[in-house]
Length: 437
Ligand SMILES: Cc1cc2nc3c(=O)[nH]c(=O)nc-3n(C[C@H](O)[C@H](O)[C@H](O)COP(=O)(O)OP(=O)(O)OC[C@H]3O[C@@H](n4cnc5c(N)ncnc54)[C@H](O)[C@@H]3O)c2cc1C
Image (cartoon, rainbow, N blue to C red; front, side, top):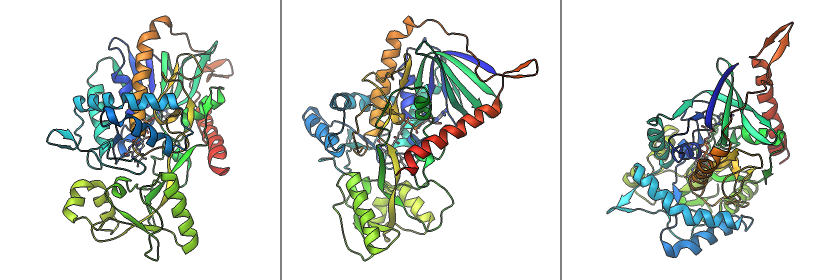
């Protein structure tokens, strides 16, 4: 078994992992893991954009929109932090070079469901990809950060209630990485669903591990279904392509198979999803239709280039055709319980981004609040680590639990055991979160 050590270990290279890394002290030695290639994260797929407090007068409205969408099940203190620190995060991304759409030097805000006003900054419909690429460009230039791709964390090492590091499996070997602080930034759970807009490699691994080690979880059953994923009768990919909420923000309307409207398009996601499911049942249909043909083709090509070209690949011209859509698993509001500094219930173990539960989203996430949560709370995790890491100045020798005795020989690279553990983790989570619904 290969052994590595780091001051800080970050599991995940999406928005939460990358922004955490950028905010750590530059004298800390940081290792980051990505399960597959770097692009295979949900951050890369985000289309719509990032919600932000537009100005000082927008605090109450943004706070209330988040609470209302979340069915008032949100943690108010976390929502306060999110709204208060949103502008600083977006200005920082702007300084780092994210090419947000602008008009005369000012952000061009768009609207999405359940926001009372335009407050979403975006890079056309490739917001996540461009945020990812910008953050990665900065991280890769830092000498204190090493990124290890195609490597899956499958267990945590702990002693006296402290996290000491993790075990992982690469294509070649099992690896133990010891660290003074460990940050779980491993994203959502869509990979365990049959229909999901998520990358299929995201299977809730951190949550499964947290559960096995008695680390506190928070509302794991809070799962969001997006109302409008592209419906294709035949599809090659398990992943469903998302038709962003910002189309409805720009006036797209929903029709049932009889050509009738049946819901106000900009209600919160869970309400629109329920209305669609009811309509599918009533009309005995497989999909409903989203119509954005009132805008011109040139505008659509410019504003929604990704959606325009993806639909065209399947013979749908969104400038002239209605888009067939159905709901699909999209986001996990619940997850590993954390405090306002992203600390889990295990010492020196943090969780940020979609795998964590700050309570910001309550029972239903407000559109475009996820990338924002990843930014605000991963920076808070980094600040906490910078402040406390000096107290934990030791990297302990690992117990090497994945060693086995073969005759008299100690075999430390127990790959089969690791694969079995990963399989079981997935099965348990699937039974709990998918089959029971
Ligand atoms: C199609 C789509 C569109 C979206 N649009 C928007 C939007 O417009 N605005 C918005 O705010 N939100 C949007 N979201 C949600 C948002 O993109 C995600 O919630 C957010 O990007 C999650 O970021 P993250 O850093 O937590 O995780 P991710 O970006 O998903 O990254 C997870 C990382 O963890 C790694 N990982 C996972 N498991 C392991 C393991 N066992 N070992 C090692 N590494 C592991 C992965 O390799 C990856 O690097 C969208 C989501 C989807 C799917």
